[in-house]
Structure formats: C-alpha cells, structure tokens
Length: 260
Ligand code: DGL
Image 1 (tube, rainbow, N blue to C red):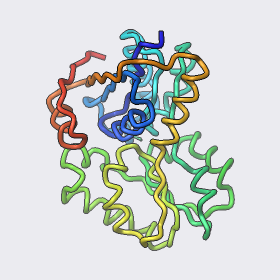
Image 2 (cartoon, helix red, strand yellow):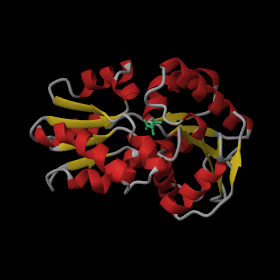
Image 3 (cartoon, rainbow, N blue to C red):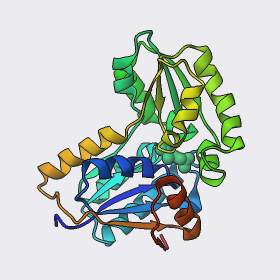
Image 4 (spheres, rainbow, N blue to C red):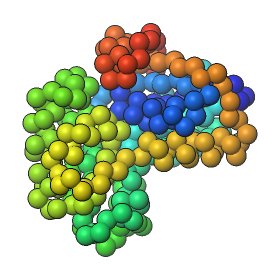
C-alpha cells in the first residue's frame, strides 16, 4: 500500500502547479498526473458534466493502483469532490479558493478572487464566503478563457495579457490588498497578475496548503512512501501535454494516452 502512487488530476496543466508543491514537500512519493486535455476548459461547462468526468478520472486512477487522489482543480472540487469521496474509500484531498487565509491576511477588508465561472457560481464557493469572509468586500472575477489561453498560447502570450488587462481592472480599481488565485492555472501567470496590482498586494494560492494536507492525511493513514517516481497521462492528444510539460516545468517525459 505505501508504495503505490498518489493520483493527481486537473482539466489540463493547472494542477502541475499543485504537483510542484506536492513534490517539494513529499519528494519520496510516486505520482501519476492526469490532464483531462480533451475536455479543457472545465470552467464554462455544466456541473453535471464535470461531476461525471471527475468520477471517471478518479476511477481510472484507482484502477491503476493509486492510494490517494488529489483533485488539483478548484472547478472539479466544487462539482465532483463529494461524488468522488462517496465512491472511493481512499483519502481524497481536494482544494478550493483560499478565502479563509485571505480573510485573515487582509487589512482593508477588500478581497479579489480570480476563478472560473463554474467555481464562482458554485454552492461551495458561496458557503466558503459565508463561513470565512462574511464581512469582506469581495471582487469576484470570473476569468473565462484564461486557463485555455495559458495552455494553448502560453503564459506570456498576447492573448493572456489582453485577458488579464480586462480581468484585473476591477480588482485593481477596488484596491484589493489580497488576491486569491482560485484556479490552479493562474499561478503560471502570477508575475503578470502582480504587475497589474500595487506592489504590496498579497497573492494567495493553495499549492502548499494542499501539500501539507496530503502529508497529514497520508501520515494518519500510515501510507507514506514511494520511490519519487512520476508518470503522466492525458485524455486526447498527449503530444500537446508533452510539449507543455517541457516548456512549463522543464520535465521531458513520455505522456500516456488514456481512454477515460
Ligand atoms: N485548473 C482549473 C481550476 O483550478 C480550471 C481550469 C478550467 O477551466 O479547466 O479551476
């Protein structure tokens, strides 16, 4: 059991920002990373569809021997985490926008949140705000097309810059002093986001917190252990993911094509 891999998935390459934190914290673990590339982006798709994909992917990872699943996608967490937990007995660690730490960090009470439409309109997000930031002024910006542009055009592309110009304006104008990166794709453009805000603005993402949570859950279950190996898979064309892995992470590895 301890020497089985941890399964990590996202709609695409956003979850690689989480995988980086996981590997930094748990270098001895084996990971299988799955990108649902043929269904990117999740952010504008119906909840029932994302629910169905999340369950199919979790089943595929479990079938390949994973001992735990990390849902490295805010959109998939909102739609599918409960369903995945209901069908698998292994630890399932999911992530959601860092509203709680942001509410603790803000001094002027103005929070910016960047996320997908699906995340921001979810019941889970409404609950999160009600529980942890009921008194904050929240500038919640849905970033339709941003995750897709980061993947297809690249983090430094003109299309990403144009989208950020539009999406960052309301948050910058409101003087938010803390901005939540509520989609795992957005840390890839953290510098471009920061450039549009005052230098003292704090950007929060969830990679490290999730890695700590995974360590805690696996320690409790007594299933930590591996050989530090990595395996990558995708739905759809694996060539695109292979190229992006090299470009974004400096990882030159084969990518398996899974029929999920
Ligand atoms: N990376 C995903 C998230 O954290 C969503 C990207 C997409 O729209 O597919 O929400």
